[in-house]
Structure formats: C-alpha cells, structure tokens
Length: 83
Image (cartoon, rainbow, N blue to C red; front, side, top):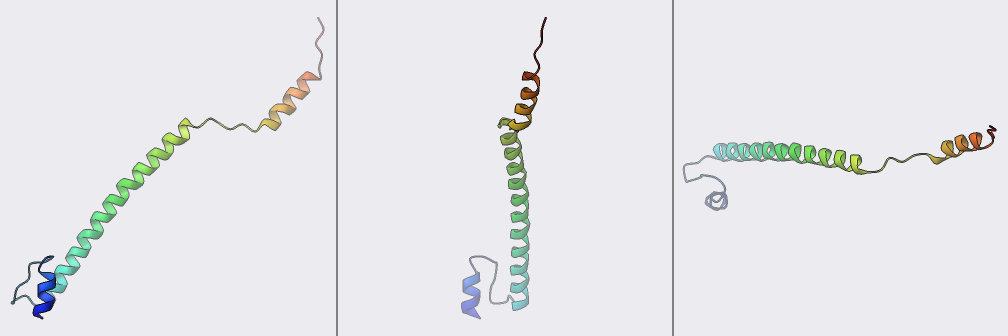
C-alpha cells in the first residue's frame, strides 16, 4: 500500500489515510478531465482542419472536363458564316 501511494503521490493528493476507493475516484476524475480536454482540443483541431481545407479548395483552379468543350468548338467550327 505504501509503495502504491508513493507512486501516486506525484499525480494525486494521497497520504496514509487515503482509501483505495478515494484513490480510484481521483484516478477516474483525472481520466475524465483529460478526456474532456482531449475532446475540446480535438474539436478545435477539426475546425481548423476544415477551415484550411475550405481555403485550399478556394485557391485551387476549377478543373474543367475539356471533352465537351472540344465537341462544342467542333460543332461551331464546322459552320461557316458568310457575309
């Protein structure tokens, strides 16, 4: 028990009177806080990623399928206009 409490002393407030139930609760509380912090950071990073992707998409040139354009030009080039 002393060895266990000594290892946890750097992370939690434990002493000789701290029960295993109290230690378990402190561990569960710490895990919950860290998970909430992680989820908050994840949401922030996800929002940043989406914003950068949107900017990247706005900067890219629009790709045009050239085949319909060629067909249209071909149709008009086959007509000759006489004045």
